[in-house]
Amino acid sequence: MVKGIVEKALSGGTINTEEISLLFEVPLFSYDSSLIQAAARQMCEKTSNGFAEVHAQVGLDIARCPRNCLFCSFAACNGVFSENVDLPVEDVVNRACDFENDGANAIYLMTTARYPFEKFIEVAKEVRKSLRSDTMLVANIDDFSEKQAVQLKDTGFSGIYHALRLGEGKDTSIPPAKRLQTFRNAKEAGLLLGTCVEPIGPEHGINELVEKTIITREAKPVFSGGMRRIPIPNTEMEKYGIVSEARMAHILAAIRLATGYDIPGNCTHEPNIVGVAAGANLIWAETGSNPRDTEKDTEGKRGLTVQQCREIFREAEWHVLSGPSKFFNTKS
Image 1 (tube, rainbow, N blue to C red):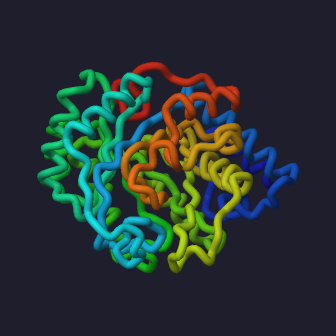
Image 2 (image 1 turned 120 degrees about the horizontal axis):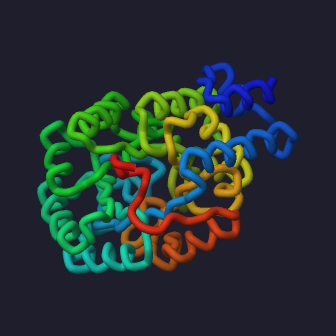
Image 3 (image 1 turned 90 degrees about the vertical axis):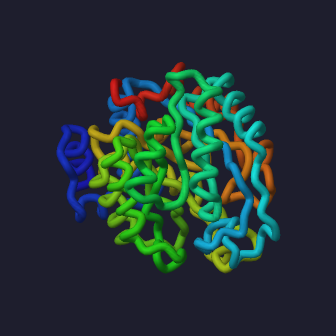
């Protein structure tokens, strides 16, 4: 039965809820799991013409964030950080330019929900002026309105990263409908969407994984994929532990087959060789703040460099794209 589902996906068919569930249920290290991962790699190579991408993110602020996402080091309720600290504009610009010079295919600017939107636009304008005109700029910020989506587009953003997370509305204070409205606001403004199934923990059941996979597919993003939750020490969610990279490779492979050929990218985070070998063609380098790190600057800690990410892809026999992202390029 699994072989039939895999063949259906590889032939361009849309696999249904029951079929996606069966893929997730396959035991790890079984023949069928290997088949799913090999097929996902084949599909991913076809959707991106054999090239993987390294994107890079600059975290602009450390803050006690009012959204209180239990899995996040910024959540005010988790008490990891006691003060709010914003990176100086010059520092943001320099870090973005360093990523561009290192060969990142797209630059993301990320903030907590307490960061003022207008300030974000001002900083982004300075970054945009300092980057090459063809460098893709992506926003990873709080939910925003239709008007704000237009401002992002006018500032020079090609797209956004946004997700309806696992446990949204329960492990966070954000209504799921609000996340989906931001998807629509971005689309109306001409911003491309990157998303994935995240943050995945050991306690998440197959039904929820299937639900979020279908949501990402229906959103028609430029990439989907999967991200595991990194336990933040001394927080409520630490007790649940972490999904292994081997298990995540199976999960992201199943997501790849479920999302189909119309979605070119399939990500895994944090970067790892087994995940990209199993069908992820997108990973991230990071500097500045990081919602999975308890350090104020993730560079040299949890955050990898562009070169380290490129080496991960090379170890998994991927060719790495040179130049601007194809995922966020509407002309590609």
